[in-house]
Picture 1 (tube, rainbow, N blue to C red):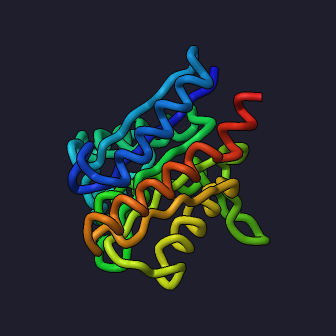
Picture 2 (cartoon, rainbow, N blue to C red):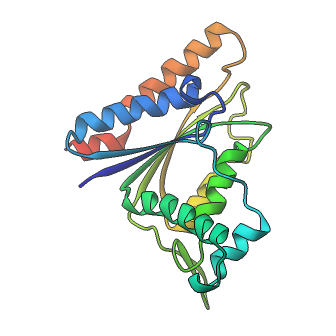
Picture 3 (cartoon, one colour):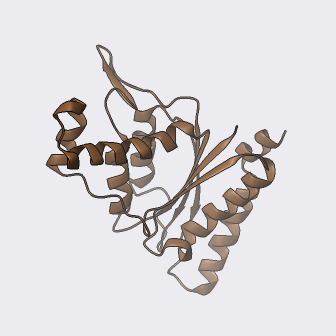
Length: 204
């Protein structure tokens, strides 16, 4: 069965512009896959705990050596990873905060990057284990950066590290530069959304 993992990382939850665009994608995906499954994760309503030494240590301990708290931390990480493993497509609502990704998204990434599960080390370097998946990222920002920020490359690097290399970005910039600028940016992003090849291919 086709499965979509829909993640929104805006601090404004459903009210975020990035969330709205990602939601529109998810709605169109449902039309293409009426019998598919959608997993939703809102990092504002259910923030992932930031990684600390105890959690990190728990990931490398055998189960019989973990404390109850460490076992719970590993099981929580396992649930996040299982969602990624099930998904064929990932859609991410991604605002730009202080030139980087939301801290809640970084915390999520820290919990799904697990050696031997989502990637492995080899003599030739790391190899991602979540291959065969696609990702669409709706990147929103208040100003206009025209590719000058490092956020997209970070996302490409991280997802690629896990084996997800088919990644498409849709940008909506200038959202804080007045209502006219905001509406133009959203309209342009919606046009790009409607023409995304990933939806066209899946519909064929």
